[in-house]
Length: 511
Image (cartoon, rainbow, N blue to C red; front, side, top):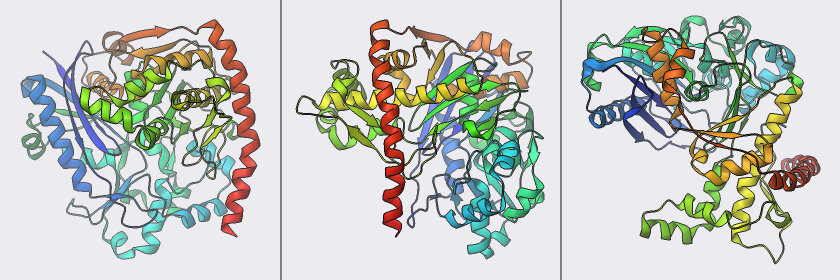
């Protein structure tokens, strides 16, 4: 039996899973890790933690799958974006990884903003704003504030680059995960010299770009022994997790749209040519699928808003879940299902850490608006679910205004497990919402890309026909569509009114 290993290094965990050529998951492992916050606005992790977690997750997946090492035909790797780590000449870290959530480089972001025209930057990188998240800002901070560590680094690697190095001994990267570094030309598919110069790094200090979905090297003897696999097993880089997840959802052709409701809400649309204008505020990455780009607007606290509500107000559900073995989220959604669409006029703005898309406002905050003595806890739960659906619709409308056409939304991430949430999204957006048989779409996408890379499929379309399976298609309910149309217009108006209020409040705090 031919099987393929997908590895995805997320923000707080690494997952590994084995799939056969029909897309069936044979075994999966997950290893969590705790991020370090040594100071305000700093988020770090020991780079070795990523590798140790990768080893443990892979061994767990192999144990569950009960397959022989010789049956593993290839490995596909994806990860979070932006996180960067300094690596010495001996291949060992000389400092911690600076995680994408880290915001220490605010002054460096301001420096880049003073030097760059945003319209030019968008045409080169696909990035709509300059923020401390981008790798370029983090590297400049490192050079300015920790020059000894910067000088000791032989390479600066993203998480996929680091895993690839530990697997193969090669310093390589690819365009999908490098797209959000603010150093990468997504059209030319390579590092951009003007941006490298501003960041104070050279091409020699970064990994060599390769094409996503191609074999970049083979397992070394040391890596094979650690993982329990055979030396020489082919390794493929598969890009950022959002790109790999789109592949796993079959979003590999223009006209397709998917959404991921995990901690964040991300919306993905495949396009053939990058000819958008920055005014649409649509971030664009290189896709893991060859010959495509991926529009990928991002709202940082999509699904995290429901987690916040669970942790702060869900004491009863958490206790009931612990006693019964049920999932607390299922209990919350069951309560929300008892409430009428529109929540009796209650609205929620899910901007708990600021808004990034469709309007960029880092000063925006979460709001519950319109509650009265009538409203109960269940209304607030449903208001969160509806708020994320409104945010999804706003991004889809932005894509439509840029000329994109689509006929359904494929739903991924933890939020896709709730049929109620998917139905709300279908009703709010007035589009069919389709769930996937395999919930771990990034891992599946990695396995698909690895399978194509070693020649088991001719291309991704053939791989998708065999490995991507749809689960449930929910159609919009006409009566709910009408109700939500009115509620959505109120939601948009509330955003519009409060946007300057958020900005003015921050300005007063700064003063």
